[in-house]
Image (tube, rainbow, N blue to C red; front, side, top):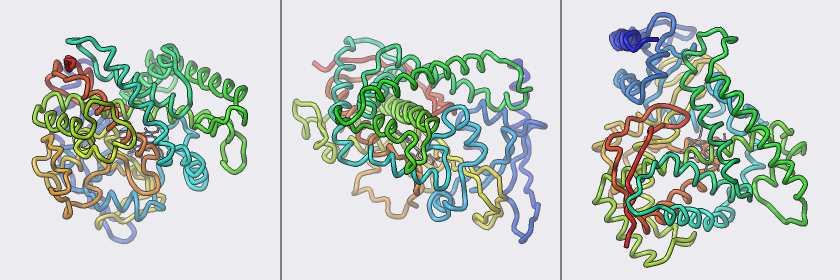
Length: 472
Ligand code: HEM
């Protein structure tokens, strides 16, 4: 499609009017107001190409707004109370649904992130033991040591692309901590290529769903190759651990747990499910955290006052040593920086659910099978809950600032309810320890002045380059 066609379509999409759809159903309640989109493809083009501005435009139309995209009827949710209802109080009335599964099928359909019901519950219970506070304590040194090595290897004045740097770092930390393995560059590259090829598939998702399935696109071929390489890698990992596992090694990391769980009745995981769990953790555990670190460091680079306060805290708490796990509760301002970065740029920018039966939300009727899009990005920037919502102000998280009258689900970067992020404690510990370790060694200067995030696998910041200045 030419640039011209595209912009004409975007314009058409912008100009389409909101049609309050009074389609009544059974009990008289209306479905949420509908934003009409383009002929045939609904709002697919707008939704797949645009960054967060698309959902910001939707949010301006109400707390629940429906639109058609990706061949689905979607209801975007901008009200924290409704987010809480869907994730927490009525979580039994929803499932991940078709829209999520279309993505799940690309990645790891049998893994915990996409399982449902009793199957999901058994998997969650089995995997939870890799994320206890005691286990996280054991991973902390790995987080600090890897961050220190990365910063020590940077040359003074070097320009660093943060996305790549942090993807390698978080993948190294994850595989050391959870799999007790050193990933060499080749294995790292297999996971990165798989991640990027899935991202590329998602870019084309909306458009592909209107092409005949047999059309072989370059993107699909790239994806097929990358997933074959990933499967071979996962097979190797499992085989190596099966051969070397057992009581004699005394290992109790996530990989050993998964290998032991294969075919075990209590966990409900067959070998395919175990393969999918490994893939789930490789993805969920590194891309999200890398994205969060990228935004946090770029924000620090552009906010010298915040940086100064952070340095002051690190000086007070750590003096001239690196942090360890026992410092984590003392790094209060570091935590505020992390939370504020996750507010402005939530790596998981929306969650999707599907009612199993017609559901009443805020006086509207949401029919069974509709995709509910809980819009993390827009809710976390809504000026009803946040003063100067687009400003980076870590201080808003201090206990004095008080947030008592803000609804709890005005902030949900890790989701909520029973399916909240299983790696949340791991991620928060990693983010704080890595930031503290880096900030002791280097200052960042912005090379990339402006970010234009787009909705990819995570909230994709694009290329983010900073200059690195070594401290003394
Ligand atoms: C900043 C980093 C991270 C963010 C923002 C994040 C965000 C999220 C969110 C929002 C969900 C809920 C999805 C939903 O309800 O549909 C989730 C689920 C999940 N996350 Fe994370 N995550 C992060 C890091 C991690 C890490 C480090 C791991 C593992 C080591 C991990 C593993 C998972 C898994 C397995 C699930 C699925 C849980 C289930 O369905 O029971 N995440 N994450």
